[in-house]
Image 1 (cartoon, helix red, strand yellow):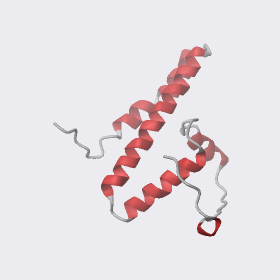
Image 2 (tube, rainbow, N blue to C red; image 1 turned 90 degrees about the vertical axis):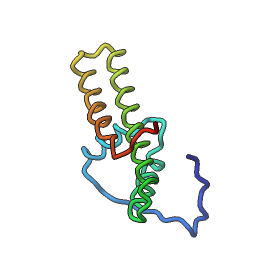
Image 3 (cartoon, rainbow, N blue to C red; image 1 turned 45 degrees about the horizontal axis):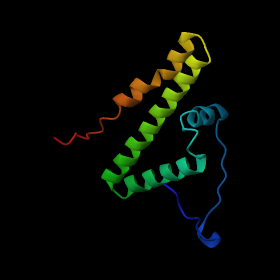
Length: 112
């Protein structure tokens, strides 16, 4: 989702510190095709949607984000296999997919 840059007087710059390992773990789950600032904006929008009780919007964004994580983990696993890493390393990289997919229920029922 491309966003237009806001005028400088309508933007905010914010810096923070966090644990390096937690940051690396998080960024490892962000697809390389998604700029970090776009993912952070999505998280802020998701949090705002939840706070404003627009549950359907929040749910859709959460599912979309989880789908991105599944895609990224699959890519990492494929790369491990292509680089001829040990099978255990590829499996380790793929291990989170089942957990993420299992958390997708969120009460969303498929249309019949």
